[in-house]
Amino acid sequence: MSNPSNGNDRFNAEAAAWDSNPDVHRASSLALKSILEQSPKLCEYRNGKTSVGLDVLEIGCGTGLLSFMVSPYVRSLTAVDSASGMIAALNLKLAQRPSITNVFPVCAMLEDPDDARIQVSRTTTPAALPMRFDLVLSHLVLHHIPSLPAVLATMHGTLKRGTGWVALTDFEDFGPEARKFHPESKMAGVERHGIARAEMERLLADAGFVDVQVREAFKMDKEVERVPGGGKGEGVMMEFPFLICMGRRP
Ligand SMILES: C[S@@+](CC[C@H](N)C(=O)[O-])C[C@H]1O[C@@H](n2cnc3c(N)ncnc32)[C@H](O)[C@@H]1O
Image (cartoon, rainbow, N blue to C red):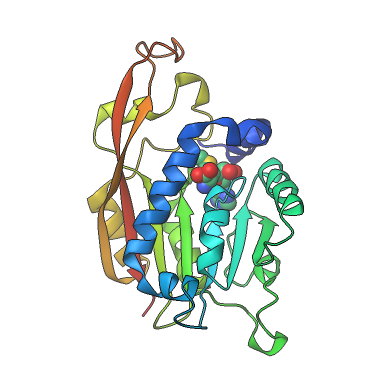
């Protein structure tokens, strides 16, 4: 049975050292590239070709690796994570980078699109509340979510009608070997060993998304345990495919 607190305990414990793992930086860089390929608007804003920037919600931002990478391309980035340790680490990094003023960290297990805690962007006037987003991101998070239908319904509700869309990246469940993505000591809070293409297509459509596309985003090499539970450090590398899951709120 799933126990969400296991996940939070694990991520609170890992937060301070999270950024010392090169894999998570690499995965975020590759996710950014794949997201930018899907939305010319992001680069147009970055290059000053348009003054219309997107308001983005990131669910499961961790220490903000992807959030910081995305922030120059968007008007605002509301960065949500349920682990207080992760948000504390993100706040510390933001305090060290005062030039970044469009990232808004929120510690929350988001279940309600109208949750007051995400009404934080300084770019929205009170009359426009509740805030609705142009884009919802989530990277390396879906495999930790106990109920995918519930989180997709929440994401759907946070988006602007007609134009708001999701771009969700996570490693693919390509069969039993996908379990090796995590060392056996880090299975707390792992709800599934990756996401499956057909299932994600169906779940996005069931949640009310249109223009659904689930495709390979990138491949990433990662060191894995030779023997389950044996620990890493034996130089065994494995390639993991990542998917990007997209859909628009009609
Ligand atoms: C594997 S980490 C990825 C963090 C970050 N995206 C990165 O790539 O460095 C998964 C994160 O999702 C967060 N998380 C899991 N379920 C969540 C939920 N329902 N709402 C918000 N955050 C969640 C965890 O606390 C954790 O920080």
